[in-house]
Image (cartoon, one colour):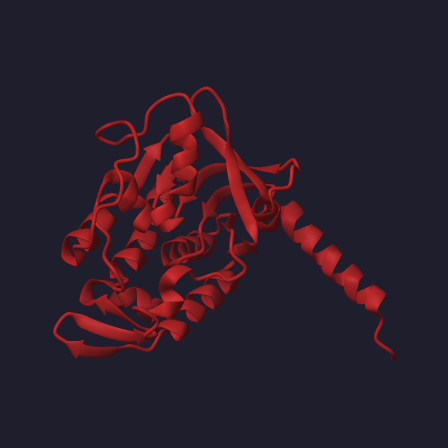
Length: 258
C-alpha cells in the first residue's frame, strides 16, 4: 500500500488533539522538564493522578544532558541513589557518598520512564501567565514557544489544574509571573523572590529539599526553582537534590490531594 502524506498529517493532528484535549483539566500541571519536574511527574502519574508537563524547549531534560561543562557525567550523592535505581539508571561509586552516572542515559531514562508511568509531556509550549481566583492559582495560560520567540501577537489558551509545580530551574518562570501579577505575597521571608545565590554545593543540596514546598496557594516549587525562590545557592552538576526534590513535591501533592 502506498503511504499517504494526508493520512500521516491526519494521524498527527488527531492524536495530538486527543492528547491535548485530555489534559485541558488535570490534577497537577508541571512547568519545566528538568530532572525535578520529570521525577515529580513520574511519581504523581504512578500514583494515578492526571499530570502533564509543559516544557518551553524542543528537548526535555533540562541541564542534565550536558553534565558539567559538557562533560556528560553527573554526580549523585548516596541519599538519592534510590531514585536512580527506581528509573533503572546505571551508576557507579566514585568514592564514599559520590556516585556518577552518564548524563545522557540519566536524562533519557527519566523521560522514558515518566511517560511510561503516565506523565504527558508537551514540549515547545511556554507558560506566559497563570489563571487565578480570589484565593489561589487555578491553572496555566499557554502559548507556543515559537510565538513568543517571534514576538507575534497571538492570544494564548488556558488549562486548568488543581495544583501547579514550578520546576523551571534558575528562571522561576511561574513564580515570577505570580509575584508580578497575582495579588498577595509569596510564602518567602520577604514575600517576593529572594533570588539565587552563588555556588555552594553542600548547602544548596540541603536547601533544595528544604525549600521544596507550596510557595503560594496552589503553586509549589521544586528543584532549582525552590532555591532561587527562597534565596538558596546554586549547586552545579550534582543532581541528587533535584531528584529528591521531585520525589518530595510529588509526596507533598499526594498528601494535599488525598
